[in-house]
Length: 412
Image (cartoon, rainbow, N blue to C red; front, side):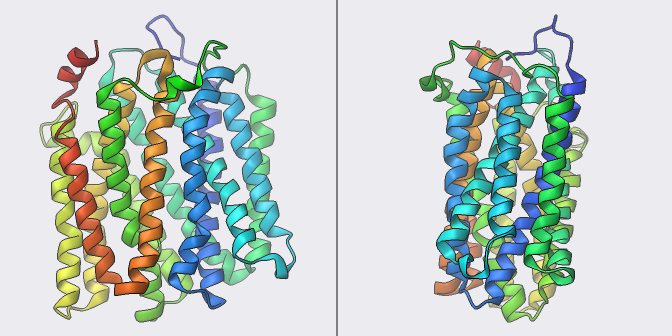
């Protein structure tokens, strides 16, 4: 599925894929806030709320493992349509269920479908970027990846805000029905307007090929586990519950704050190539990822230390989260560029699927630990766990090729 020099870019299909991905991203962010606060307000503990997202993250791992193979075998359109249809099913399960059905096992099943849907659409969109960039154009690839990833995260922030507003204004199930309309519209547009399979479908693709034999891909995937566990171990459950229960914020205030943070994070991510260029880095490599991880570890450590010293929690968290978000956004953008740079030609979808399987594993670990650590030792424990995870990502990043040019030699 490589985009060779002689291939004419399928920009029209790429735009359609990206639009569908954006619709699903807004929906995914809104569902997260709706489920989080609806069930917390019903008396669920922080750990019980975290378990609602357990299948969401677990099936994200499974989906990325299998989805790359399916995309290589049947084309990216098939995985995209499957993702959007699955999201419609997940929304319908919650939007039309009797109130008595809205208990942990049922919601976990619905969240499992949402996790499958989100990762199928993400894998399809990220892989499609590689199809329109000719080989050897690393700078163009980095710019496109940064724009796509940044816009996705900004729109996920919009989704957080939409979820908080809809929960306040129309309630849980009416909000889900509005989101179902959005995703259903995107699905219809893809079915009607997209031509072809998007990417070269290959009946020769084998399931065993999803496990990369490229050491750089495997090391980067391991670093990704630690990086995203470092974010979600304090951001997913610990932070919103801390702001709601200990600082007295309303759920729409928490949703708006998280939305603004994720939107800002997405904007920084989109401008990551320009920020690195100003620092004298044209094509980031493993050394860049390691240095960014070491810098990132400073922020949760400072926040935890300031809270222990009885500093104003609102000031500390807002300032610390801004710093963490800027560095995390650039680091994540570098990772997203490197996986597509390391990806092996026609196996790009399988390499990307394997990499995002690691991403989902990190989110799963972070989500579970976020609820568990908060309930056990409080918010500061979540922050120190973040420090440990970030340092793990830094150690692994040190083993990556130091620069893009050395990785070309190593994988040639």
